[in-house]
Amino acid sequence: MTDLAPATGTRAPSAGTSDHPSDQPVSNTRVTPPPEQSARARTTERVIGVLALVGTAFTVWLGLWVTPPDKQQGDLVRLVYIHPGVAWVALYLAFGLAAVSSVLYLWPRTRSLFWDRLAAASVEVGVVFNVCTLVSGAIWGKPTWGVWWAWDARLTLTAVLLVLFLGYLALRRVPAEPEVRARRSAFVALFAVLDVPLVHFSVNWWNTLHQGATVLNPGLTLKIHGSMAWTLLLGFVAMTLAFVWMLLVRYRIGLLEDWLDANELDAALAERQSEGTRTPDAGGAPAAATAGVPGGTPVESAGVA
Amino acid sequence: MWRDAALVAGKDLRIEARSRVGLSQVAPFGIVALALFAFALGPDRAVMARGAPGLFWVAVLFSTVLAVQRSVSVESADGARDGLRLSGIDPAGLFLGKSAAVAAQLVVLEALLAAGVIVLYGAHIEVPWLIVVSCVLGTVGLAATGTLYGALSSGLRVRETLLPFLLLPIVAPVLLAGTRIWQAAMAGGTPSDGTQWLRLLVVFDAVYVAVGVLLFGPILETA
Image (cartoon, rainbow over all chains, first blue to last red; front, side):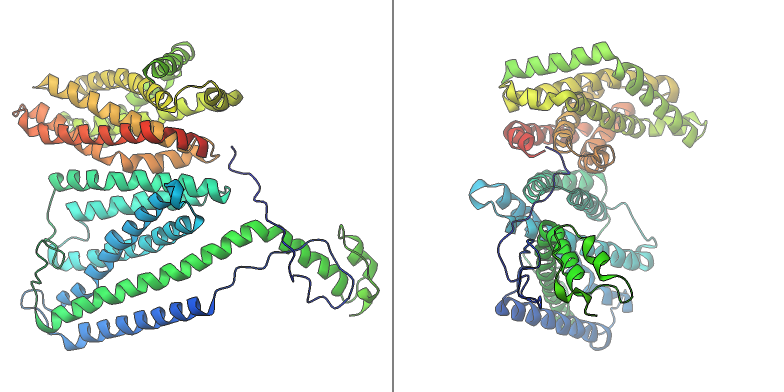
């Protein structure tokens, strides 16, 4: 099968021509309307977005002004309110969700493009968070370790994950029918996820410099206390909410992109045809405007500017 | 499954034996890569000997990409893929056969590259069997992952650029393990230095061979 198979849209009868002033049908090209977002979904999305914004604002306020500087690290410790939260989203939440969605897509009983779009959205947002993790880590590493980058096990794993999922996104950009692209992407995500524990062990044996996990260490005992602990926790919540909001928006955009892929040509044709009947060039000949459009029906009102 | 695998592997190896693409292009490429590493690291043989394990595996990885591209492209002409699917060959057998053919070519290439590393970089190997085992295990993993990704990307026009991007990060554990085992073998340390890496290679091979055997059918339908 080729990767350039034309995406054929379903031509459902619709209200696409309802805005035409003339009574007679102007064209035989009908366009499926783009998927609408339900009122509840829109509200949910907005609420989560506002919560993420407020949470982030509070994290910034608490992290920069309220919490005390650290004995050893001074003001540098304030990065602890952002960096682990971002890393948690990038390394666990986003890629975990992408892995689960990909497997659910591959599993015949749960196969649905919903899981494919969810995986795609999750990886894309996860890559953004992954880059933020690396950048904030580098900013933190320079003054504390003396280097922007160290070939430490966790840094290396993060970088490898980034490259693996950049590959996933590159594959998704290859034009293909939605089902073909979904299966291909799901396989690549699955192979990448299987690789993660192997990379994890190999880079661990290879080199370790990063401090142990602060929050997610075995036993889940927090090593920092008071306002710092609460701000750190809030950072996790805020970043998670930001991730969920971006995921929802990206999913909706993915839905619209798929609609556009399927209906782009029909929509453009319909637009072109209505253009020929409704808005000829101001000074040009009306006949020329309609004659150039295949299938366009010349109507009496064509000359009206 | 095994009979199908032998058939497919025999077919691929016969094609290679007759076309000599592997011999006349992939193997010389490996040697060129070794020479380029030498130019990059300067004429100091001590530096080159120290870097020899990693350089060997990097050269193997790049050659793997070429070998896989070749293995895919022999199926892309004249509807050969559809022919294979129509022939009733078990997909698992097809996967094992394609992988085995790639692996066989890689083993020959590795022998050549190992000789090159010893002669050109002055690498001194204390524990030869460790080298042999690491090469065999690493090759199985490289061939299996390469065949999987080759099949996934086989229908794509952008295969040449996409395949290395997808494949090389995945095989990073092979590079790490292979390099460490070589270092152990060259330092003359106890073989136990390399055993955890050997175990990692075994797990890597098991995971991707199992995935290939189980999923190659659906993957072929996808591309």
